[in-house]
Length: 137
Length: 156
Image 1 (tube, rainbow over the protein chains, first blue to last red):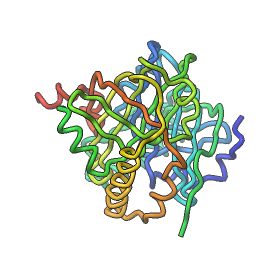
Image 2 (image 1 turned 60 degrees about the vertical axis):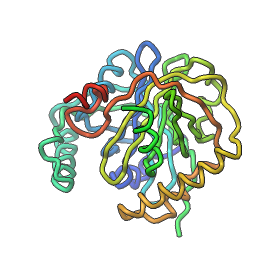
Image 3 (image 1 turned 90 degrees about the vertical axis):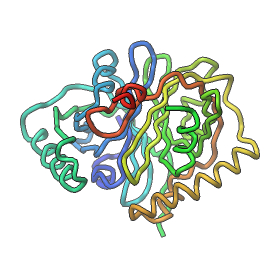
């Protein structure tokens, strides 16, 4: 799997620096959009809150491959994750964890009427590589 | 969105990212470090050299998507199009653009409480330049209109 141990990168999963997710349609057209937060599930899996990602969801139905670019808020290192979509969870502990976070973000940004969690999308991490090194004062 | 409107948005210090996909359909996401748009809706984008797969596979006609986000308001626009020509090394005008971009993006980062060291960390070691003919623009701002064509959103 990954040469990077995601468990050692909590700053990638705190939502301080919003990551982006890229997907691709069956026709080869990429799509890229910001995420509010990336979630650590286990050493081989991450999760993304599915809120209003119509195109991302449509692409994943055709092609499960995805990529995330995420910057660690503690080190400022940036990582590129190659992912394969596995499933969407709409109940259970992971879903509830994401819902609590989404509700908090919505409250902080006064976007309660905009943020609504549809599911927790779970991805297998195929590869993780650091693409830039952080510079901290 | 008109080209002039997009040009103004791009000069305002927005976060810039992009994606391509290889022949297997595996996407690659990358940072863009400054971009301009001309009146023919062609975006000239400085792509981070960490996008190794993109650099190796980019070709005339390749599909590409770019997302531009005002990090102070969340307003976000995605431009989808195709690459025109081949990747190029940056020239003097691109280097000048990078300086302008860094100043504007750095100001935006500071406005939301991030230090300039974050910008320094995000700065690519080098860039290559791609020209993108924009076919469609989409609203990517969080909310119910996310993913809709900007033309449709602007019509209400």
